[in-house]
Length: 243
Image 1: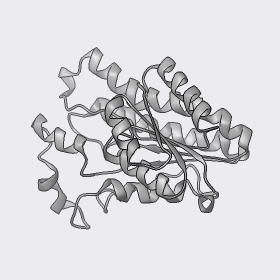
Image 2 (image 1 turned 30 degrees about the vertical axis):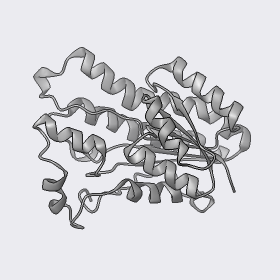
Image 3 (image 1 turned 90 degrees about the vertical axis):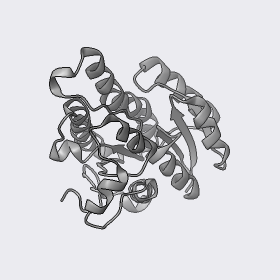
């Protein structure tokens, strides 16, 4: 069945991989991203997809985006929240501005999009929410206390959503990836705190870095009819890096 799916952070990396997979599954996909030009370029390659420049940390921006989605595609029944930012900073060096931005995008941005989408799902009696967290929120990570805190919040938020929304036909699950070869991961190499994708990849038990397609395949299942009895779960797609 074709449904309307929203993917945040859909211009690149995991979000783009998820958008490509959901389009292949037959859904009508809206790609939301702060980089509007990149989102439009990505959507141009996807049948029936639209792109909307959106800052998920801005409540008004999210509200406008979902209004446009309903107008152009219809009510939202699938939501994958992949938009995120990271930063590598020793604890004493984390500024108020950095802390606030990480939390605003990664945690508040997830909440704003969920809150905007849920009324449509409730009306339909059917919905699928998949949040993208991080295995660093499970294991901890040095120089990333702000990032891990935000992603830990995403995991807790998702579990509460699952409990609150289950009787309304809506599932909520979270995927906390580990090493995934994305532009964000490649960019992190310049920080000096991350040794690099090619250095870490051999340390992964399966012997390679993950790809956006790996995450997207699990999203595809979690967003399907077949996953109706799966909710509130933390699905580790990490090649065995965190067990």
